[in-house]
Structures are given as structure tokens and as C-alpha cells.
Image (cartoon, rainbow, N blue to C red; front, side, top):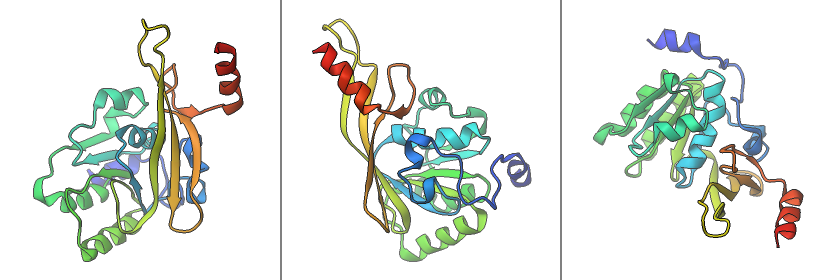
Length: 212
């Protein structure tokens, strides 16, 4: 199975970055998600799905370990290929071993540690990621992460005159790397058409002014 999955990967292991949505790529060190390293994502399953969408659409197999609330319907809405998605919602006490095993065969792996891992365990997993060229996305802090991605200033729209419903959200995504100052951008997550993209600040300001 491992050989089959690796053959089906559309992303070559000798490439340092994997497909990354352009709305986020420019915020990340090196201009995109890198192979063989870990990233921390601060408590946002929606941002997590946005990060998975581009590599999944490009043919990369993805795995999600220890996140039972990860919704496949929402994932499909973001463009994640469910046929190339492996879910391990309840890894139990062996979450680190399960994460390492999944990282051996998949290109991008999501995990949420139920507790702090030992320094030795983190170092072993880091070495395995580097060897396999696997990108790890951790929900929460991670000692050796390349960068932390977080959301703030979330605002919903779509209510209208009281008879509508919330159908779009703007957020500020901030990437804090180990080297360099934090970078931020205002993004639709999602926009009124359920797309993930950067906010056109000037156009949005004009629209709000016209509406007011």
C-alpha cells in the first residue's frame, strides 16, 4: 500500500514546497508549505481545511489523526479529495505512534496531540518527517514547528435586513515564523460563494461605503 500511495502522489519529494493556496502562500516562510516540516494551526478546523485543499486537489494523499469533529462534508466543500483522505478519529493513547505511521505513507498529515509529547518523541517524529518528506499540520502548539498560523478579527456577513443568514466570513490570518516578523492578511473564509480567497480591501471598503 505504501508503494502504491507514493506512486500516486502528484507532488515530488525532491520539491521543497507543496501546493499551497495563494491567499496563504505569501504569508509562509519560503512562499508555501514545505515538505518534511511541521506547522502549528491555532484552533481552527476551517483554516486547516483551507491548508489541505491545495495539496489534496493536486493529488497528494492526506491524513487526519485525532480530530473526530473533522467533517467530511465540509472538507469536500473546500475541494479536498475524499478518495485520498485517511481519517483516524480516535487513535487513543498511541496517537504519536499512529501519527508517525500515517506520516510514513501520506504526503500531508494533520494531528491534534491530546497531551504534550516528550522532546525525544518530537525529535524522532521530526526526523521521520524530514526523511519521508511529509508535511505535518498540528492543531495547537508544537515545539519544532516551522510557523504558527492563527485567526483573529473574525466577522460574519449575510444577515441583510434580518431575514437572511450568515453565509460569509472575513478573518485575519497571521503567520508567525521562527525567524522574521509575523505576516498577516485579510481573507474570506469563506466568501459568499463558498470560496477561500484574499479580501480586496479597497473594493470591500467601497462596497461598505455604498451600502452605508
